[in-house]
Figure (cartoon, rainbow, N blue to C red):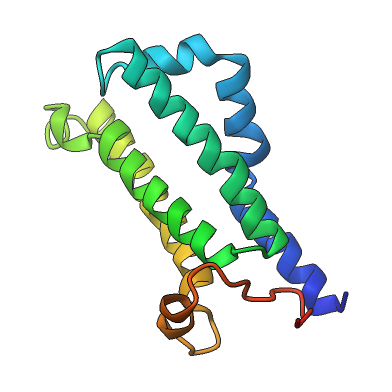
Length: 154
């Protein structure tokens, strides 16, 4: 692997570090807590548990795809959607009622978390569209193909 490949590996792992190992382990070791948190969005326990299992799938399988380069664009696309969805479901800054009235309120802190989720998702979209000017065309033509991030061509 070239020096540029090592740098790309480090950057890609930096992108997924929040999910694997930390968030995935938190869900596994604190499964009941995670389900209770999901029940704030979906009350029935089976649906909340299914949401946690879906999150674990994204956080483990898709992050491994991004780091390994296997179907990395498709995996990054899924993670970008996951980031947007979790921002909308779990960071409802608009619903707190204190956004404009209290600079130290829950609404303001949730806004920053909401924006962080969206920004992280946008970082994953850079893997989808590439930084080489190729845009969406390669992804749309072959969504499960590898972008060969570390220089290894088939």
